[in-house]
Every structure is written in structure tokens, then in C-alpha cells.
Image (cartoon, rainbow, N blue to C red):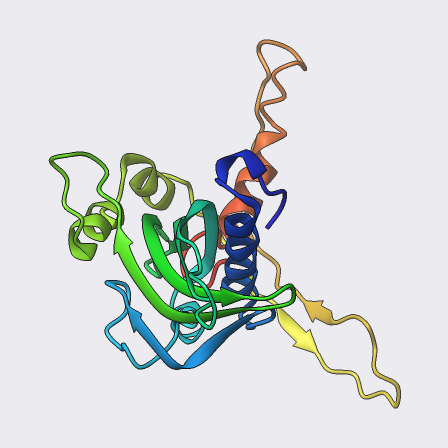
Length: 233
């Protein structure tokens, strides 16, 4: 989660609350964050207002890949009034990114502002209300969730190129040989059938500096390894 840029926060209180929220959302554990018994939650990112943001992020992590939340800046818009009330209102600007589980694995990014009503102590922050709203990219853009997500799901040129233009390499058939042994072995032995193949060669016309021949095994290896989609390695 990295280094906090203190200058982006209007005061130390907002910075500390933002850091606690960011840790809790990315770690999947409340940590220094807690929720009041009367906690209320309203967000365009969730249809279930009875849950809290940590539960929603945990659910989203089961569907999306590489979900991460960053708290970008924040400010205290209303300080606690005189006792017995110790609740303050804080606005936190955030960005969330994740990979949508399609075979080209597009990266989706959303930004917005959360208004939290909190009571803080030196060791924990208790959240009483949490309201999310999406930011508008421009004056003529929509702040609806559907309008923000759909354009980012459409495959771009390089998505199609990566899937359709990269040459496929053939995986050779192999049979695992089972050898009975009292002790487990840290390796496996395979029998590979003979294969008829043409001997290929590449002439580096511009000399060794181009090293065209060295590209061939790299291309074959990178196409065996799945770099996109839900089975990404």
C-alpha cells in the first residue's frame, strides 16, 4: 500500500482515517477499523445495504482478479461537536481497480468519494455511516456505474492482437512414468513420443546484434504460459 503523500490530505486526522480504511479494504480484515451497531451503508457499487464495505470487497474478490483500493486524499468536513458527541464527517477520495474475468482480462478502474461519519481514538476508527458516490470524469460524462464500466470492458486493439495474432505453439504429447518408491520423489519422469519435424533456421542478416533466432523460443514459451483470463499464470 506504500508511502502516504501527506500533502494530499488537509490534516493528520483525515490522513490517519484514510490509511486505516485503505488497510482494512486491501487486507480484508477490519484491523484498526470497526463498525457501529447502527452502521448504515449506501453505495452504487453494492445492492446490499445491510452489509459493510469489507464484506462487499471480500465478495468481489471471489469474482474479480487483482482488486485493489487506493485512498488518494481526504478532508475533515465537519469536526466533532462538544461532548458527548464525538462524531466527525470525513470525505475520502478513492480509486479502485480490478481485472474483469473475461478471456482478454480487461482492467477496470473506478474513482469516487466516500463520506464517512466516524468516531476515532488513537487505536481505532469506528464508522457510523458510509456513503459512496462515483466521480464524474467530465461535465458531459455519466456518473452511473453501468456507463463507467461497459466502455472499459470492450476489447481494445492490443487486446485483440494479443489473443488473435500471437502464434500458437504445439504442446508435445507426453506420458508420465509411474515408478513405485517408498520415498516421494521431488521430480516426475515422462516419456515423449518421437515427432517428425522440419529443421528450421534463421539467418541474422544484420549480424548477431539482431539475434532474431533467440526470439523463437521466447515466443513459444510466452504462448504456452497463459497471461490473460481467469486461468492466468
